[in-house]
Length: 344
Image (cartoon, rainbow, N blue to C red; front, side, top):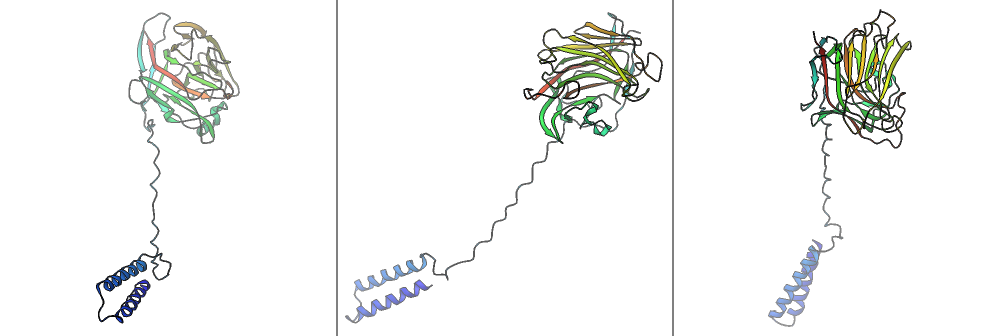
C-alpha cells in the first residue's frame, strides 16, 4: 500500500538523522521511530480510500424473489354434476286438514347440501337472460349464500364483480327436488332498502307447455323496497298464459304485521288442482282458482311439478335501482323450508 511505503521512508529518515549525532540510538529515539511507524501504518490502511488503488469490486446485487400471490380461498358452495331428482306428487291440502312433512331443509348443517340445492352464478347470460330477464344489477356468487347459526343467510353487497356493482345469491332445487300440490312454507326475515327484491318462489321442473310463462310461475312471497317506498308489503302472484311477451299475471298484496325486515314471519302457499292460497303467519290473504295456458286446458299449467327458488335481486324493473342511501351489505335469513302433503 502506498501509505506503508511513505511510512518506511519517514522511519529511515528519522533514524539516519538521529544516528549521525550518536553511535547508537537511545531508547527515546527507538520509541520515537516505533510511534512514527504505527502512525504511518494507521494512516495508510485506515485512510479515506480515495487514492484509487484501494478500491474493491462492488458486491453483486441481491436478487429477492417476491412470494407468490395468495390463492383465492376455496369456494364453500360447489355444484355437483350428477344430482338425483326426487318428485313428490302430493295430496291436496284442505284448509285445517291434516298434513305430512315430505321434504324440508332446516339449515342445521355446516354448509348447504349440493344434492339439495344448485347455486346460480353470473347475470343470467348463460341462459340468454342477461340481467335475469328483468334488468337486474347483481352478479350472483355461490358463496353469497351461507349457513350461520342454523339459518340460511343470503347476503347482497355493494361490490364490483364482472362489470356489475352488486353481488348476491340465488339458489334452487331444480333437478334435485320438485313437487306438485300440497303446502310449502318458509320462515323468513327479509332485507329492506330501495332497490332490493327478495323472493321465495316456484318454477316448473320441465317446460311442459312452453317457455316462460306458458308453463307457469308461482311467487309465494316477493317484496320490493321494504322499509321505504315498499312499506311492509309482500306480494303473492301467478304468471301464466302464453310465452313471453304474451304472458299475463294475477295476484294480491299483503301488509305484514310488525316488521318484515326486523322479525321472522311464516310465508306459506297451499296448492290444490283448482285452487292456490297464500298465507302470512297462517293468515289467509289471497286465493286464486282461475288461470290458463295457451297450449293446454285448465288446470294447466299448474298441474305439473315445480321446484323451489330463494334469492335476493338488486335493482330491476320492479324495484328500480338502489339509491345512494341504500345500506349494504344486507341479508335475507331463512330459518327453514318445508313441504307437506295432505292426507290420503
